[in-house]
Image (cartoon, protein in one colour):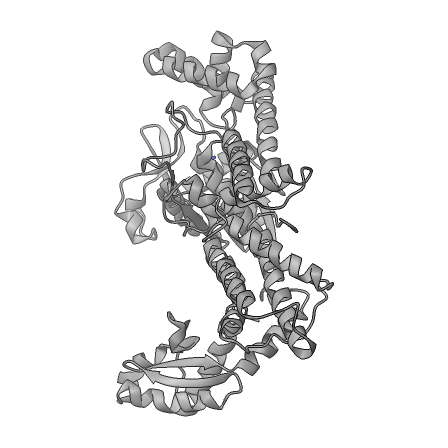
Length: 575
Ligand code: ARG
């Protein structure tokens, strides 16, 4: 169930009944379980309205709350908060219902929305590096979380397949291209040629001009350039597909920038005819400081949102406006998430403002994230200063996981070991990323990441495998176990109160695009389970006690399995 939503409604009614006013309860989980499970914070704001000290306002509300079957204790605290402790009987029954629910207590979202998640979106002719890792991992987790919450989700890879780089690449291929190398090692060859071409263009104006001309020809549909471009795209796709297969990530759509080229001229005309964009020195752009209906903070900025260059070429911004129309008109999206590095914050702020001025009502959100840093605090690089490639990173993850598994002395047969090492290694990399609030930078630390203790992927996979082993010994099927978990020891009590939050956490993560909320929950479940299992016999228990304890194990197991799956992390049945 969505426990906070449920209690919020309860508190709203109690305030209405006790005080005769409507007010926001501002219900929150308490920081410290000593003070109960939840807290009503909203009564402080009623002081002026009711002309009474907040503690006096809180007293009748607390009394009303105490009448509800859900509540065991309601205490006035501090300047006028109400601390609530849930009754064990209520918690136990609510968990029994979650266990009996095919959705394991995650109610289907109302209203169901259609959400586009634009993520990964790397650039053609370049290798994906660790910087793309966060978008791919975060975006995939959000897709899965939103689907579990009951939404209809479209995963879209908005490839950077249509920029200035293609002019340079085409001109460069003519100069330095090696056909055989392009067949053998396409990405290496494209990167090599691109580097040479962009160097040359900096000092040689004639070459730069030639590159621009090649780009214009490509964009005008020239057959030779089009064929070359298709080769670049196909070669890059092959290497991208390999990485996505390793990560277990998939997309519903691959609509890169090139897919919107035909719509760009119309976008520019529309912006000009509506008075949103204007010409300046031959280019066309939106100048926010001149627009009355632009958001205030953008009106204070100088940077224009350029939609056409002087030479007539369309831009990243132009394709993004066309994309926003497409997502509204063809995909019928209620909401679109752009999972992109924080450094593009200004671009998205501008894009969303332009979309609003154009009357696009789709909710557009920049799901921004920070950088991955090396142990020196700088963006992650290899020892020789190159950006770390994703393939090498994931290979290293598996190697290191395999070593850790041996050190832990885990009992794995020789035919299971390599697959488990891969699942543990890749799961560890993903979890290390997802457990952080996405807005923060984080330091890539192999030892913390691949750990069977603490808030790390392997710890959670191990906790799950342990529950599976208990249920195997009890000869029950995790999904078929029914019963009411009991809050009969301190550890069982604490674990049950954590388990009750699952449905709320999944929806909160979906609404705010914050997978770390789910990570925090799963970590609390794993830790709570380990304390529970130390205190409570499961296999040696009998009768009702055994039923209740198996129910607790099964519910914890289902939350861990479904939660890890939502994070894109493979569960391991035995280790
Ligand atoms: N290709 C871009 C980059 O790597 C990211 C694209 C994000 N999506 C978008 N609709 N702008 O920087």
